[in-house]
Image 1 (cartoon, one colour):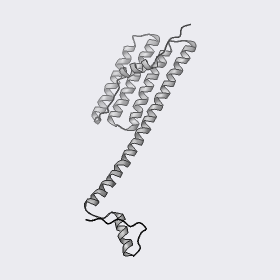
Image 2 (cartoon, rainbow, N blue to C red):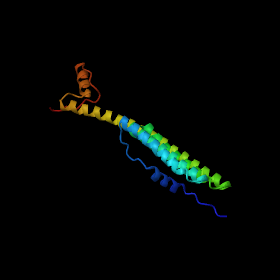
Image 3 (tube, rainbow, N blue to C red):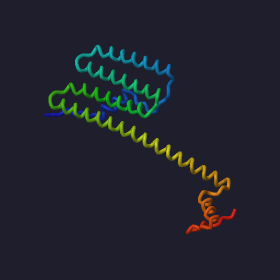
Image 4 (tube, rainbow, N blue to C red):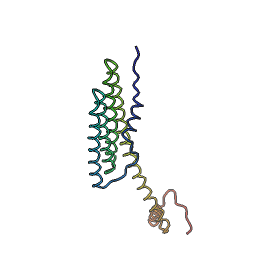
Length: 195
């Protein structure tokens, strides 16, 4: 008995090409956001009306593709209007869910155990994509925190450099001179520097 081969990698690539992968988010104004939303809704209605000529499962697949295309476009628009980690996460999840819905409809063409396996594979791909999106969001947040800490450390270091450029003694030398005035010498005296 031959088993039909379901290649979800090919489905994912085809869906990404179909929905258009937005690599760089560009900010848009409020009026452009509103106009974009209206345009996306109109495109969805046109795509859904084009599906009316199809029959049975082909129509269901077409409607799932149209709905997925709308959801991804709205998430891309939202990400370009307010580019945050959360909106990028929503965009990744919207793409994964669109792929899943189309794959689920394509599995309806199968019967019995093949259909069950197909749906489970699609569900596993969805779960993996959601986990990847969450990991990417958490990694980006950690990188942002790390870069903020690095910037703060660089600011402190540059202030020390400016202080030394003004010939102000560093805090260790100030402490040494205070101890010397009190006639309490540290165990390891600082070397003398000539100015």
